[in-house]
Length: 79
Image (cartoon, rainbow, N blue to C red; front, side, top):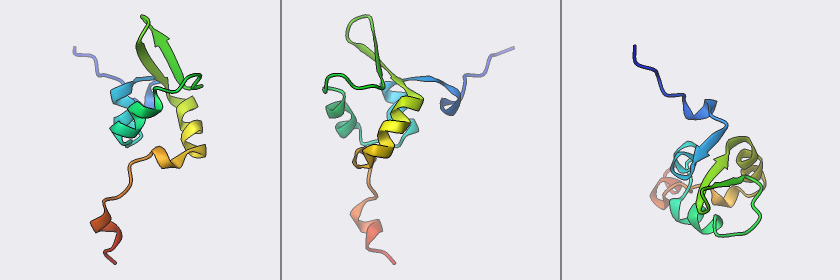
């Protein structure tokens, strides 16, 4: 019997790529953000590798919504 992988919404810890996918982030903005020191949602392992604490990052996003990917300009003007 093949085991099913847990859904991202059920994981407490995400890889950087999973966080980009789950939170629909701009990859460029997210990687730039990860260069900052002392982020409360980043857990390091094996020196440089990073894991994202899902619930902590969700709280951070509430305070910093500019990190999310924006709708393309052509969609904003359609009405």
